[in-house]
Image (tube, rainbow, N blue to C red; front, side, top):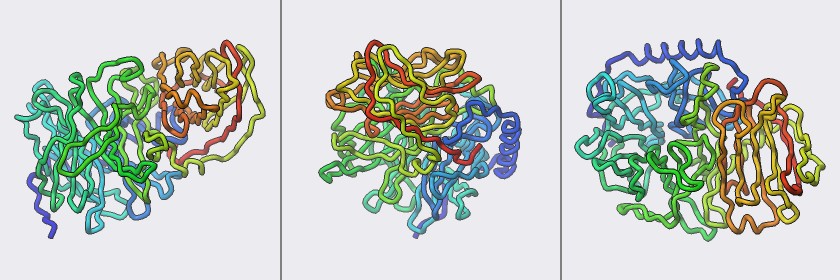
Length: 516
């Protein structure tokens, strides 16, 4: 019999009043919002700052995406939970703010967490609460604990907070203790979350529970071998079948502290994965090196959920340390497209847009261009606000040193360049010509097999203020913000120091997901 006794519940503010204030603040920001870069087909808040996707699930026929939200400004602040839902991952409905800091144990924020349906069919949430050790600010450190809540309605818009279920053993950690992910493994409820231990090592701790209330620490599931990594945020852990039908486990985390090396770890913090094996009761055993989930400049804190035999993942497009121009427009931050995760024939993790994304296409144009000559540009679209571009490059006949697509090309000469770089053996998103936001570039390194292939396949999603590039059936992805200037936003094919040979070029106009 499942117990309903929870160890700690100290209300310090009225939850409903806090949510009402948050809603009013969002409405004020939304009324003033500038939509020049506001996404047409990516999830974002009406107003305010958002970050990590939370509580991803499908419940009673609806998909739910919750997310970290600061409703009172366009920079990070005391965290709430925002919420959108959909029956099909195509048309989305904006829901009320779901949680606000109202308990002592979460006085400074309701941080990230996950959702799971219990044995009685109820949707339960596990998340992190944060308070300051001195009750005033972070100068004396923070106290993070794991909290629980349960949905009170079929639309999962009203949550009942159940209190703290795991206190922080502060003598064993250096204040970082957050982001629970819960699932049922062999009949036992299992939780992992990120920890910085007392020595400052980034770890994932594993707990189990019989009743979803009383949780017992079991062991360290994984410790990052990089001595510079001090915390593993937003962990995920899930099984996938390889091409031979063997079960592999994928461990995902967002590492804090890793130093840049070559093309790796170029962002302030980086979301990465390893593939390996796991036997319950034992640590995870990696069989691959650490690999980036997304090679772009603006990807972090991914979370996944399982439904209908599919593993679906969202990530947050994080501004990182750039001065994000959208912060002046009343909003900041968006999610990636929903991506399906699978192990390819190559044994590696692939992430591709879920098939439902194809239902956002409203017009399709097949272009007849077969080649772009040496140092030539060809106009593909005069003005593209929201499009998907499928470009297949003939590698055997392409002689260009770099070639690809200039998107968000505006009359002032600004553009973002999605290119195949033959010299480096990479696909790059280059923002050197950007008129605003961070510049520089990010690169996905192609494998020897990819470079020896006849064709390079690119799917490029261009929204009002972002670009997502999927390479070779999602073996690599690059997600980047891109802030076009005023005027028409052209798309051009271009080729540098050689010829670009095109096998096919298809453009799809993309409709709104309904959150504008």
